[in-house]
Length: 311
Image (cartoon, rainbow, N blue to C red; front, side, top):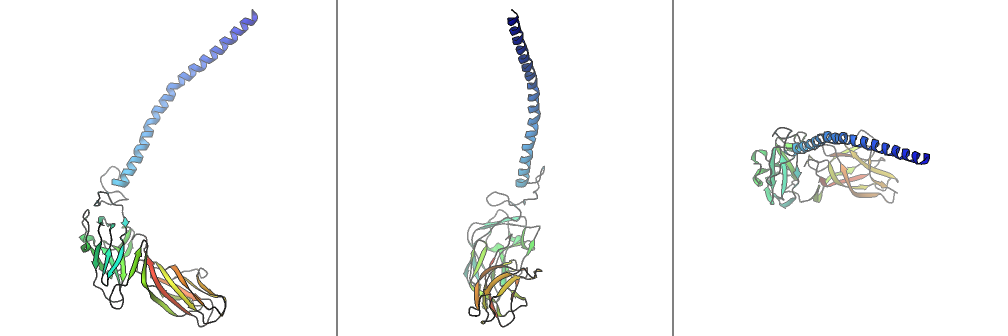
């Protein structure tokens, strides 16, 4: 009898504990539900904030219809708005001595949208041995209307970088390309692909003695570029084994920071040549020298140039 009574008491204890826990769990359910209900507006608010940020970047400033900081109030031909400084570079090709082709391109020009979908032909009236810079003429551009060669001008005035416009400009005209003429005022033959332009024939930049003193050399690249492909040829005249030629950016303050052109390994192998991609200062200059004094001739020719950021 006592054993049965103990079993009954144990069962009742377990039953009571179970119902007590169940009651507590059920009591917590509304609290959990209330917490979820309180969190839902926060979640919705976060999603709304993300939506507003995306809308501001795409269409305008929060709460207004004005253009945002990251776009301009210009509508493209295809219906999309243009980001500040936007560039879809055209393909440039020489047609003849005074004309070039400009394949389809798209550019934001100081708040206007310039786009063309067919190849344009632009003629220039040129002087000899001169750089000509091609601009999208702001005053002639109508946003949303495909431009023609009339809205493109070619002048000898070089552009400067505009921080506020995110591009290379002369006033409100945006620069997109440049060509150089020869002694007969004809456009030099060039080949453009992507970020690089190469000449059909290299342009001499230097052909003289070089020794331990750094010498400035101006390369034949447009005023907006600081990237050039250069051909170096060194004739050490059989003099000084293990001497070397080097280049550096003009105005560089570190005397030890030089870039090797080539090493004369012995007096019997005294010629070094090769092509090198170099960076210039804003005046399109590099400096060159040789590690030993004496009669050493260095020939430098410009083979081509690279587009800068923002063009």
